[in-house]
Amino acid sequence: MSESTIVGDSNFCSGFLLRRCYAGKPRKCPCRHEDVSNPSGVTGVREETVVEKEILLFGGLLLDHYFSVDRWPQRGQDGYVVGQARFVGGCAANMAVTIHNLGGHPHVVSCVGSDRSGETIQRYWREHGLSQRFILETEGETGSCLVFSEPNGERTFLTRKGVELSFPADLAEAVLLCEPAWAGVTGYYLLGEEGPQILSCLERLHRRGTRILFDPSPLAGDIAPALRKRILAISDVLTPSEKELDALGGHEGGERLVQAGKTVVWKQGARGGVVQAPRERFSYEAEPCLSVDTTGAGDSFSGALLYALAQGGTLREGIVLAARCAAKTVELRGPHGFWKKRDGFSL
Image 1 (tube, one colour):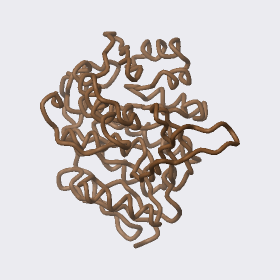
Image 2 (spheres, helix red, strand yellow; image 1 turned 90 degrees about the vertical axis):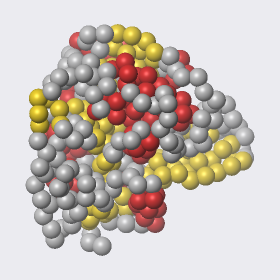
Image 3 (cartoon, rainbow, N blue to C red; image 1 turned 180 degrees about the vertical axis):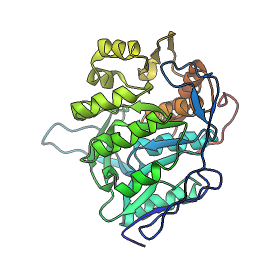
Image 4 (tube, rainbow, N blue to C red; image 1 turned 120 degrees about the vertical axis):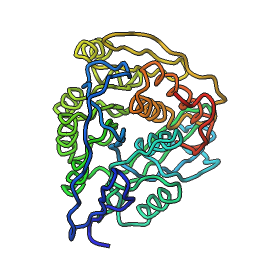
């Protein structure tokens, strides 16, 4: 394989082939727009959408190493690991699997290393029929995350960054050949040195009609202020948790975003959440469930909402679907799981 190769399927757009390496040139994307109404109810966004209703997910893919502990020790003290497991992870991965479970065909935008971890991720993606169109294999190591889970459900994360935060020109060029209806972006993806290049790509997509859902992530406060300002400017929908909302200026900051035409979905875990949009405001309840592992629940929520809006669902319909998908994820061990869509998981 060449130094940098985009691998994957060839059905992103009708008649569009994008299996790209340094030796080849991708064909021009045949996507076209048409004027339609905006049934989603999300205001402050363009009334134009893309026929294909494709979804891009900007976020790094890595491996999650889970360790269940009997208790979290005091600093400098010992503790015991009572169980461990490994999962393909990353916020974008969790969002992608939820959209896939609902019948969508999402495309994650991420680099993976030319190492064993990168091979594991690509094999996992292929085995589950997930799109690899914008997964770029490049030289370097794939990142990893250590997840420590306590009996009460509390989790602690320690991440080793890898090539998943890089954004080579080849990847940007490939992404810009198409015009997806929606793009989701995680705050983690903007923490690397190439955050400005990622933002430039997203800004170009947004100018061409792609709507943006921004899931800030717990480290939203670490995003460079200039980048944070830029991503907020182009975000049509934001899905922060309570702590993440603080990084965006708290309730006053959220109100300013709504006044600027954004839709803010304030996720509050088991207590449900609050939706603030320019034309409507309402609260929602969390779906009852048997809690097994809360990891990835917020990602599943955002992914399901993204899917619903891309399919033309209303904002309220999207929130109901998102809450159900988050509850389903909580009932599974690990950051995501594969399940068949059933009654209650349709718009």
